[in-house]
View 1 (cartoon, one colour):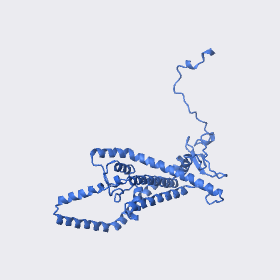
View 2: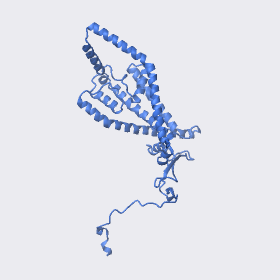
View 3: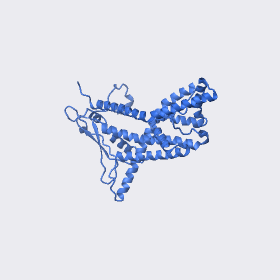
View 4: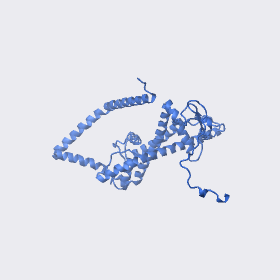
Length: 364
């Protein structure tokens, strides 16, 4: 029986770890929330029986009263489907937060919502990914400027900028965004500090339970346009910063778990993100000195590329890209390890038929 390769073993380990984590979460939630859930159900039954006896409600009347009470909750915020409320709803759709505070009720609205989400969610994911990369690029550039200023002052505490520094700065910015949102919702929505912080974390993780939803009181959608704008911008900016942090975490995880097969056919993710930050800098500042080398013993025509990050002696860091295909020695045959002659990049598909217009008739 063949042994399981490294990638399959890692996949099985991740599956087992995930289900173990789910079981752990289920046991903890069962222990923490079961008693409160039973208490709330008993209280609802007591209130229901009291209303039936006091107002002589039948079972059908009670169900109708419950349905009306549930549907009236979103209407407290004002008109949900005028422009402000519709824009807020569209924002939570493409960000996949989905609080559940309102939903389309007509067939045409439900159909458009499906089509809108089908195109809007990928667009939003690409946008947040791009913004996250730009945020990391700006952070990397700022860190290098800060390092250079420290070196000019004679301090050598920061020799080089690593992905760990980028992650720490991104997490710090994300924490400041969460703190600002916590203060805003605690002040305006009158939530407790813990509930406001809880709402920010649930929103940025795109879970969106809907137990706490802003802009749902005192006609806020029409009476507080600045608050509506601030809430939408808070969601978008927070998700962009969160995307930058997740981008660095995922790339770091991929780099630490890349096996030999993957490394032989793919560039190391950590080197990719550092090169990308350097190459795509808005001010064309070369953030990293990335040198590309070739390695023998790889597949024909696909030289393995290796990266190294080395600062130069002057303190400035420059991006150097050297192609492995410019010399014959960079590409070798995997069997005999002899230099392979360069291939021509053109071929003759058909013979020329009419070339009289290309011939200088005066020569004849």
